[in-house]
Picture 1 (cartoon, rainbow, N blue to C red):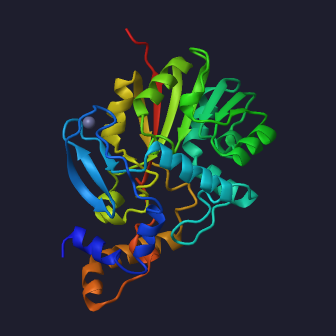
Picture 2: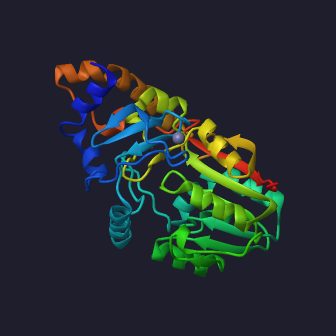
Picture 3: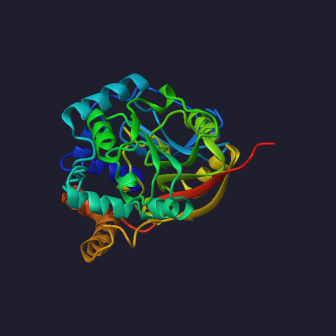
Length: 328
Ligand SMILES: [Zn+2]
């Protein structure tokens, strides 16, 4: 059995089918081309049920097609926010409560690079956090900042306004505008993999940021060891949400072309909540399961999802530190 057949077989019945049920509560209706170079030609990287992970033949961007349309996304996000279920539970059954003080501490640790870089750069700047959620990034900052945020969830936006005195726009990035050269720092954690129009967004960011200002972009990394080894079973595959499958080289190229100088790329892991003995053990166990999965399936054994999906690991997440160049 090749990888595609293994994934198909595993997800055809319980427990693997849960994965497809979670991803495809709606049938994706948008067939798209490359969001960077508009090319429609692609090669299939792997299939994820109703969607495919593909590679643009021209620029190498990896992305999901078909995918949920804008209309479907709006509906699905508003349903999630309504139920207040966004990111609250992952496949391993771990709860993520963004209002709980202990969970918040851990989540802030996950963002330590963004926070340290900002604290090193300025103590009194004007800062925008795109997709600010419940203000985890703001909570780690030390200084007297003017804080701005963009956030779709009303509950999260109101929490961040109240707790951090931030000026939060509750809308999509496309619907908001700020003055030119207004911000010293713009942070964007786990947003760029969700958007269908990255060029429009990065051009806005370029305009809003002061010349020399710092842009921090964090994204899952589909060029990581875990992504390459686990492929279909990479834990950050969520084709109903993660539609641009960035790697170091594609994100670097994209930021560069938009007018940013990439200074450094970081891979948060060792100082995060995911670096511990439990996760290391799972790393060995799950890799073992992943290798043996074709044989398991042949014997009729379908291991639970938590044993076949990739565990958190170094390289899964990347943080780009870049600065606005002046366009000539
Ligand atoms: Zn392309």
